[in-house]
Image (cartoon, rainbow, N blue to C red; front, side, top):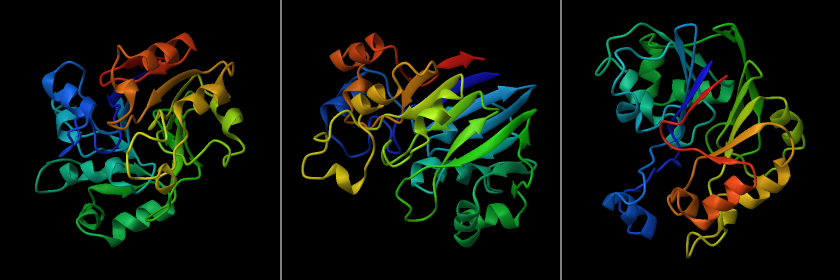
Length: 262
């Protein structure tokens, strides 16, 4: 199994539109890498599964000649499904793409244009099966803001875990057990500090802080890769002291194009 991080940024990516924050300016100047929206590509037996379809899908998929065989969606926050516009008849000539998602996420897509056209035209087909390329696809409920749908982590054959969004580890009692049950886990690292966004409270869009994640999963034996970095997160700078702290703690920071073989 090959795992490729197509996008390691939060929904708005880096540099974020209309932002003049220092990290955004550094990315524009080329002194730190750009990051596209959250997405994980899983490849096995010549099949491709895309976990979340970010608004940056066209850029992430630029060197491929066909759409993925299957898509799995975590939830209905815009950075995780908006790239599906590139699956429509206005853009792509393709066969149907299998869809793994929850009933509430499917209902959101089916009830709202233009996403409903993908379903009506048979371009996105929900599957009642749970097997992809010989791996069980398990959608594991996690607590996260549910304005439009519920939220899940995606387990691929109990080998890889994709979990880019969660409110907190404390509100998910099985967190350590689930993460420890996988060889590699890509976990929410949206914020380093609660003070990253002046004038706004992190309580309005909760995520576990990076130090909390390190404390929670230190010693579990799973390869933990931190992803979904907000454009304000100092981990966006590979040379930062925060990055060194993470690596010295035995964790990794995702980057666009990062590949892991299982």
